[in-house]
Image 1 (tube, rainbow, N blue to C red):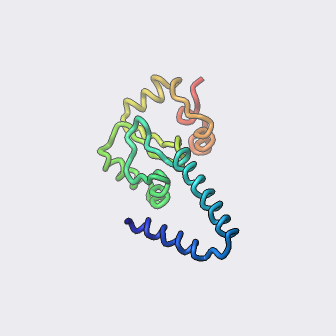
Image 2: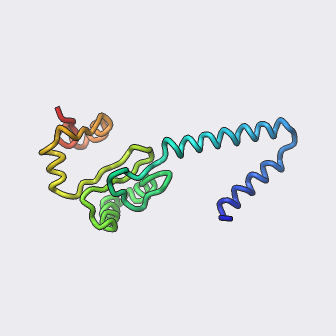
Image 3: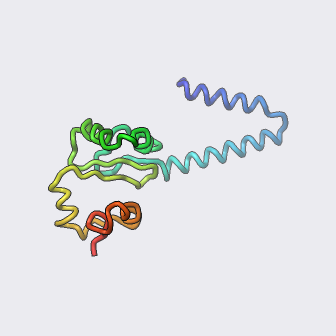
Amino acid sequence: MSEVLKKFVNVIRSLILKVNSIEELRQLIKYGIGVTMITIWYLKYVKARHHDNIVTLDEWHPIFGHALSVNRNFEDAIRWSYQVVKRADFPKVCAMAGLYKHHHGILILDPEIAKFVFDTKFESFKKGERIQLELEEMLGDGIFTSDPP
């Protein structure tokens, strides 16, 4: 039995041993069911996922995606990003998963693909309102933040 499972079993045992009445036991069962349902919902619908079609970089956490690594390396983000991409052998396109199911940062490392996205087929790649709002102050409303007409 793993250490985490042993700790979990010990916590459950200590909670059950503290129960003094049937009402307290009912309350404990209600809380247990509630926590279980929220956990199942989070794991099924919310938690970070690998991108379906693009290489997801390492240092990925199954619940938090890259959020923990990004936060841990925030002060040295450029060097850290370079090292992560280097370990992946510099793929042409790669993804970093956010905290939520469909939040990915897509890194385009190939100049030809960047030209395709931002010039040749610009009208096919919408960025969406969230990207525009988050990057407008830094990048303005130019090609990197605007949606096609």
